[in-house]
Length: 142
Image (cartoon, rainbow, N blue to C red):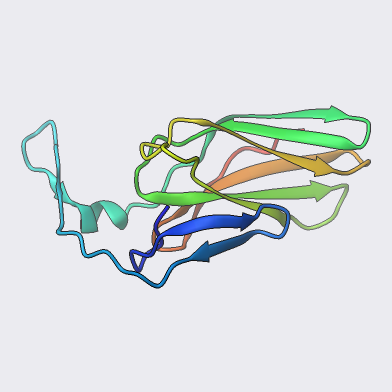
């Protein structure tokens, strides 16, 4: 995965939400994205469009372990996902950050996290764009 500065990144810790990046940069020329009307947009213009939310988000609660799963956004302008949890009347809390799966450049893979928690909670997931900005969250799931 690469960050905005073109640095190679890997997820260092899902539990803490750390992403480690190298200092090497990669200069890539703007690429033309096909448009059905023949106009097309550049990769810079495409990067300004916020990433869409992931799909098919599900929670599988078991005793003290909740597994949150989802399918990628099919957006090549993201660097990963942020997962949030809310229990009872509490505020949403970011609990995990995940980079893209290796080899999943078109972001079509299945993703999951495990949350050790005993209370009933809601979860939501948002894609993180290459600019580091979060896209819209998914609908809340229990």
